[in-house]
Length: 336
Figure 1 (cartoon, rainbow, N blue to C red):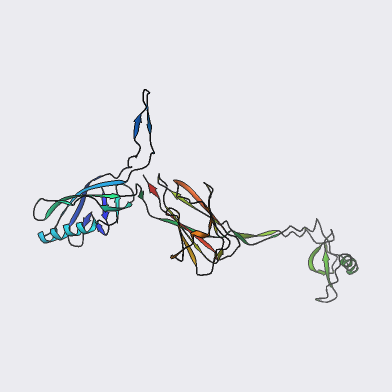
Figure 2 (figure 1 turned 45 degrees about the vertical axis):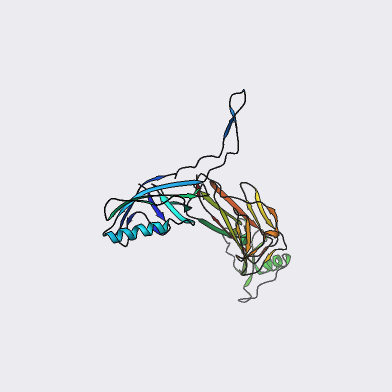
C-alpha cells in the first residue's frame, strides 16, 4: 500500500471535496540502475566497463479516485493535472516506513480512464534528476570549543587527635605560622592550630578539653565544557546533502568532517560581525554571506563533506575565539 503526495495534493484518503483517492502501484521507486556499459574483451573472457554511476530516477504512478458528483470528478482530475507540473515539485512516497521524497517533474502525459461519471483511474510518469530518496532534515548546532568555571579544593587534614592549646601555645604557634591571635570575642579566643601545626578554624577557645578527629575539606565544582563538535546519524544507505550556517561574530571559521578529515577553511581575513552569517551548501559548493553575496573567494581549503551513512561528526574552530560564534549543521538522510 503506497501513500503518495504530489506537491500539496495527497493521493490518498478523502479530501475536503469528498473525493476518495488511492494509489494502486508505484514503479521506479527502488534503487536506480547504473550507467556502466560493458565491452567484450577481444579474444578474452570478460569485458571492460565504464564509469559506474547512478542513473536518474523515473517513476510511474497508477491510481484512481471516486468523487461524489461528476463535477467533483472533473475538478479532481484538474487538481491532479496541476499538481504534476512540468516544473519541479516535491513528491513523497511512503510504503511501510516514514515518507521519503524527491524533486520531480512531469515527463509523460496524465492518462485518465473514466470508469463512470464519478470514478476515474489514472496514471502518470514523472522523473527526478537526482537518483536519491530523501528523509526529513536533521539539524544541530554548537559554539566554539571552550571550558567555563570549574574549581577543585584539595583535601586538608588536621591529622589525628588535634588538641586545644593554651593561649601561650596558640600565640607561639601562630607566630610561627605568620598568624596573630584572634581578637574577636575577647581574650579567651585564639587561633586554633591542629597537632600538625596547620590552621583548623578561625578561632581558638581556651579550654583543657581535647578536640576529637581532624578537619578534612575536599570538593569539586564541575566545569562546563563545549567540545565544538556536533554529530548526526544518517539512517539511509546513500550520502546526503549537508548545509552549514555560521553565525558571527566569528573570524576565520574552520569546519572539519571528522571521519573523512575533509576540512573547509576560511581565511582569517574573513570576519563576521554580530548579526552576520554564512550559508554554505556543501553539495552545491556555494558560500553566501547573509544569503546574498558569494564568499567562496575567502576559502583557503575546499574540503567539502557529505552526510555519509551512519555517524557523522563535524568540528568547529576559528582563527580566534568569540563566545557567540555558532555553527549549525543541517543534513538530509538519503537512500538509493
